[in-house]
Image 1 (spheres, rainbow, N blue to C red):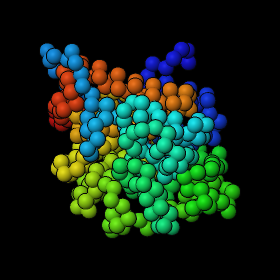
Image 2: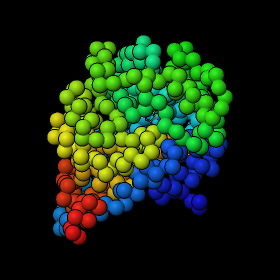
Image 3: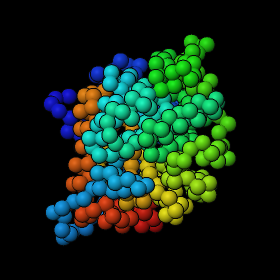
Image 4: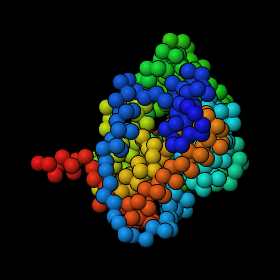
Length: 364
Ligand SMILES: Cc1cc2nc3c(=O)[nH]c(=O)nc-3n(C[C@H](O)[C@H](O)[C@H](O)COP(=O)(O)O)c2cc1C
């Protein structure tokens, strides 16, 4: 590629060039046929705009509030594991970029840097993503460390009782790199050396018995609000509001878990309707353009989270790369809002977009 990237997608190729194949495959891959991986992106492309004209858009305000915290734009950093495989500074670089962009980073349980290192690296609002381990004491310790270190919410991941089948990782025999965050708490040794070592490790440590009543357990060990990440149906959205979560993330884990789940943008409205405004709904999966962010907001998301583009930015250019990725999405969102006649985030409404479903319906 010649010159500086001009959009977020171009960082993917730079990351591919920068990383060993095993790591690039780990970051970029999805489960099995990778159908959902493609769909997460393609489904955004099937949504079109219904822009309004002759609105004063000389000033655009991208800022928004997510449970009580003002951020510069409705674009947050999704939790993703093992940033030191992308860049020697790992999550510290990512956290600094998120802080400089005045947005929230969700730190993964499976981070390369510790909760404490990330907390002291810069001043920002931060959430902590929790994967629940079979040894509940370990999970409790992580939550309490996050709370002590000023993280403002727990994002409980509920779509990964075991790892999805990622075939590139199986072929590459994906390793378990040093995970400083859980060092001394969980042994990273895995007996069998066939297939993905990471998958074997996850099978050994993740608690596949996690269920709805455990939200009560989580509440008993922390005062932090809990967001639940991995909801794709109205049934689960309703249950989540009944058990008192503070927010819902519509996510299919970046298509790394169950293949042939629908693209997240296609089920967002179903979840938003079921929740009925009781708690904020967020979305991740396939967001690669400011136009995608706009579409998610029009269909009811409070904000989106970005996974792979952040890692690609980090791999290609460290902290600067992550800043650039967030900046590009913000710039594109600003332009989309201007050209759609929406001076502020609250001006973006359902009637600004047309979904594929509506198009088909109008042809009948
Ligand atoms: C390399 C990688 C690692 C991830 N690690 C985690 C994780 O540790 N915990 C988690 O809840 N989600 C994890 N995710 C899922 C992301 O939080 C997010 O749901 C997904 O990346 C969004 O899709 P996108 O990559 O298309 O933006 C990971 C995703 C990727 C790509």
